[in-house]
Length: 153
DNA sequence: GCCAACGTTGGC
DNA sequence: GCCAACGTTGGC
Image (cartoon, rainbow, N blue to C red):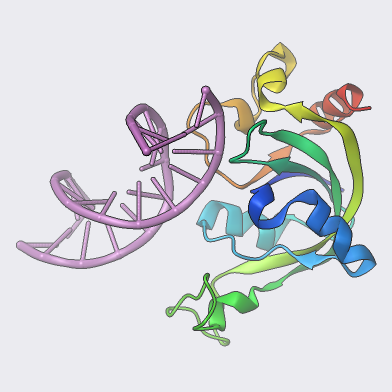
């Protein structure tokens, strides 16, 4: 079992939206970055746990926990010409993008802010706090996971 | 809304 | 295969 951090803009799809999906969860679609794609496709497995991160918002930070309930499958939005994430170079035979199914697990009472995380020396190796990192999917070590959980309430 | 830091595209 | 131009992310 591994740990991850997924970013999402709360205005687009926040943790409350995931919670509203209930037990069946939501496909984590729309990721169009190869590095992130490889992790989604190859490394992220059913049972893994995810820190849900809100980006592009007033107080960016980790707001709760989600879990992977289904291994990645071809992201259907790549085949849909009407979809925002349509990719004309992808085909059903040769899908390019993948998404796992994720489900809400819990929400923290208070956001663990990026500012707070940046100030913690034990977390300085996290991709999240490193300058210029734009990955929307990134691994979290067990140590980092436990440390951050300790900050939650 | 600005802009730094990246990633991608496409001409050559 | 190089690299300039362009697009996107995301903190501030």
